[in-house]
Image (cartoon, rainbow over all chains, first blue to last red; front, top):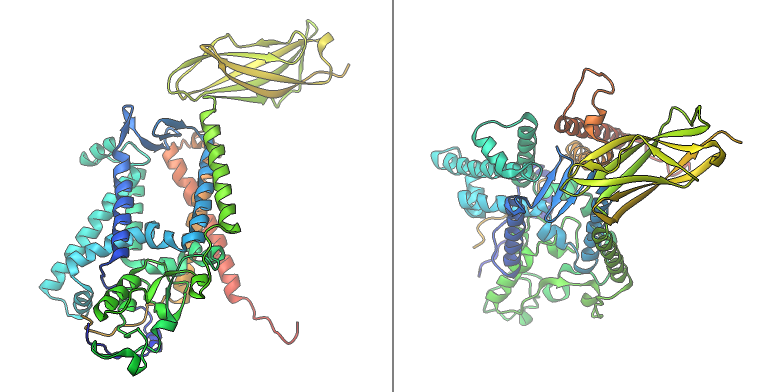
Length: 462
Length: 95
């Protein structure tokens, strides 16, 4: 890197409307971190559906059966609250980490980034380095080009199909799905969603790449709202770097009046979104830190101190102290802790039983010949255990109230819903207009598993 | 090491941007809508409402629901984007 070169002015590029970005490969601390993140996250995605727990898939969102298995837990549509809570927590964590570390999510954890990274690796294996790729694209079609492009497509498509298969494996038992695919016996919808997800991966990670972040991602646009002067950003140290300019390694930069930036353009070439970090913080920057690695490698070669481009904060840049604990982070952290505690408490204290009471809408009440008032209800008993269980149904809330149409105990299958049409009867002397009554379902084998539901009993006004 | 000069990100045309945004954001909203809707309703209970002859399984029900939400929100997004883009410019002189 002793040579530097003159670059065309930036504005010239604006006329080229659909130019492809060839991010240059770079080794360094943050590249290692991003590799670890990619391996870890993709590893999780591809391995988790194969894990087993108690003779069944550990993580399975069984949509056809309307049951979610999460390791030891079985969730039903009625547990939707948990899912909503989890999603809210995920959003607040995102805010929290953004306030602290800037666009850590974008640079290291977003599926768009992670899959793009994997696709770029495959591109490098087959088409070579950045300059080789650029040359290859410019060259006329030849056997070599066909072979390289063909093997890239083969890798990409295989990987995408496997991704689609894995995705489906979260919603259908993946082992059986694998057998079905081998036997070419896959349902139409399964095939469709697998191909759909595979194609989306192929298009997003292979072709659209940074355009998704630039044009389509809402988070990229509003993340700056979470930023403050203490948020980690990647920044070029202008006071140290300017005036930039090429020089020989032997030249004393002080005597030439030059800053530390040798204007080698490496930070631009490694950028996956093709921005110049030296122009300041830009919303296209996904904070992947490739430019830090690039600049550090040059600083090492020039024997200048590292960190001309570095992780810093606005306060630090201005020589002020950076605070980690500040109202913004404390509020996010408190919210997260409270929600997490609430989720844990409600998950561990939840009764594996749900009782729904629906009043008969057709008639308020019926008067029986024997001076008895009758109201009709439909009870739904949902057993959230995986084994069948007996339950005792009862009603309370009025003198001498009786439950008809049910023979206790009722047995409900594991994960099953039992619908029981029942009638509550009260003698005319004990019935006054509208009364609040309660239905109770109790597990026959464990009286601590009890659910009480409110309802109403109507009778003619006395 | 550095062999050639290269600058300038590819940029999407405005139409392409709009289409991408409409498709993607309505996809997200359809995903949320489908999740909420089918957490409350079972496709099997719903099948046969319009035509008792029509029996739809759960998987088909989810798919139909998802695409219904996607088309609905894409239509809404598209009209919004179009209206915003074609709105007459505000005349600063005659407010």
